[in-house]
Length: 211
Image 1 (cartoon, rainbow, N blue to C red):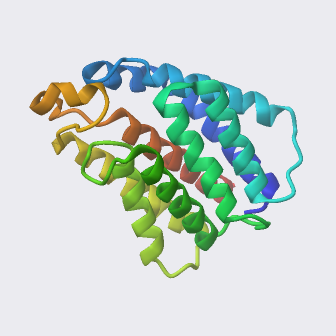
Image 2 (tube, rainbow, N blue to C red):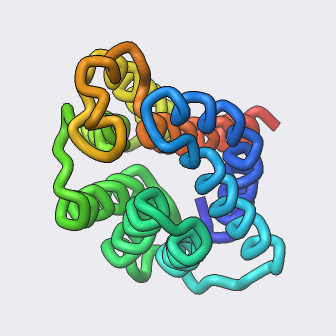
Image 3 (cartoon, rainbow, N blue to C red):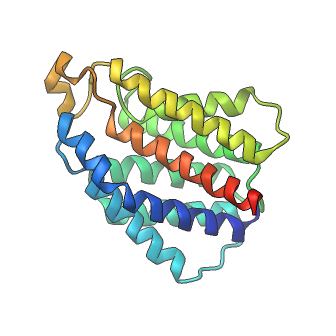
């Protein structure tokens, strides 16, 4: 996937994430402040505006860094910091890459995860977006890179399963932490957003291949 194709993919992701606001808000109202969906919508509306301006990026890294910077500046709050960090730190690890391949995506997500660990202090099992990100990374790490679209789909599927697993976790961070066992049975909204981002990336790639 070249830079132009990546920008088109992220336009699709941004549009679909904006549409997902009601669902994300609903789940965040159950265990959080109820503003996660609004924050994600605000961030991806800004990304839509950024990419609609037809920017030219020298490589994949520049595109992801611009997206992360835009999210961090527009979203605010913990989600803006975390998802902005994912894109910005991930971009640094793939500087100079002209195409998005399975190894490049793995390096991007892996570096983003490490930065999130340092920034937020959460770990797998703490009922956060990390629980949807780690399975995706593990899926990419275990694959034999051959078909980027299929590898991305597998990562998205693994992320979705990780998101579902947060229903069985007790929150240890944020407002949900105060709920204790009452947070059981509800998926983490951040994990849901992470899962959706990868799902929409895979959806776009698979539609492009079908065409």
